[in-house]
Length: 154
Image 1: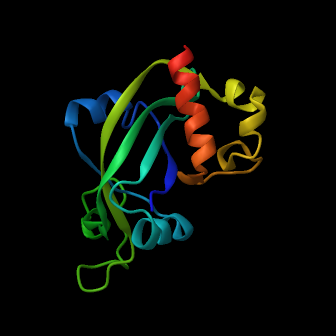
Image 2: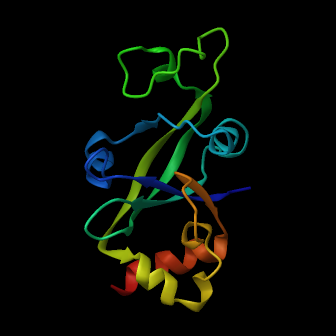
């Protein structure tokens, strides 16, 4: 069964264009236990992703991607030179997990947060909930299809 997700990234850190250029990337650096659990247990190869640019001039969905490798230990956690080390994590006792993703489609125009808020079928999207700070959130199949449709209309 395919699940649907929204992955957030700050474009000055890692943009959708970076993903396109890399072809495949490790989605590393997650340091939230709820999201870690999804990466470890729930997010699977073939799951569909909406790629969200946050902390940018225009915030919103910029493309789609797909999971190409199930969750595995995030080795950046035990690398003291990484951008997000965790000395409590080790190869023998990994705490954090990541998946690999690859791009599917870059949208011609960003689907802005306001466009999402204004669409009646998207009012319950987790990313739009007040106080949501998770870097990955679940998306329903209907929400995913609606956003893809919006990208094709622009």
